[in-house]
Image 1: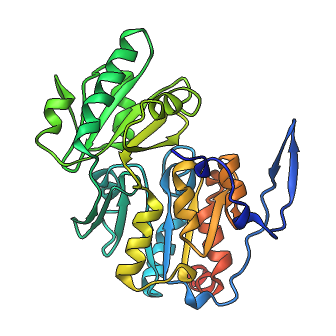
Image 2: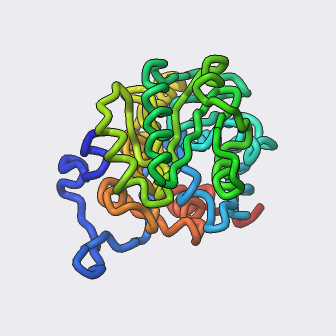
Length: 315
């Protein structure tokens, strides 16, 4: 993975005023009030990450989001969940609401009405080296787990309760198999996810990049690294969706908190990092939203689109 995921682009931050708070030896942007958009009616697409962004600390969608989603639908504004999570998991959260498009598996699978409309499977030749690396590293005593993420199901070999509980948070359709590589032969493999409770950004991420495989390696959470098709990410999926829908970057809002959200924020004219986000994402986005524990996505949308505010309050 390139350093652009981990450092702010100077072209994005040039001329941008920031309020900084001193945290030890590190200066980080201070959460600030969200800007109102000059022309809120121009927003046609809102894209949001899930974990650490839309979801609260307990992994739940804030209650205030559901009436806002209805308001967005009535206003003709499309809301798109964009996550490293599996499509089946996302649909389980939003399934009662029609008309959503999902960017799943960190951009490797875009789904509308239950049909994949944009798929970027991993190159088959990278699967065996990743499987072998995880098995070999785990054999030395490292606490690692592998999820081979297919379009139909996710596949795991580890069956201990602690690991399975972690996996089921993100993968509703999951099978425990004797050989994940063999299971991969019967599915379209979208990505490989490595669970590393010893901090993925410092250990597994660099090690996987060091394998030199033709793949995209992105740290998608504190304990997760995703290996995908080279160039695949949420941002590229969003750009393709914008083209398909005839919606411009200027008509798009995006919310994120972690390294796998970087390109997605770049693809939106109105980008928001959550106050609880990774330092490089806080530096990269044009705006800072309140934290996920404060329903920051909801309050930021309502602040930026005041015509929804009145509808939301009177509903």
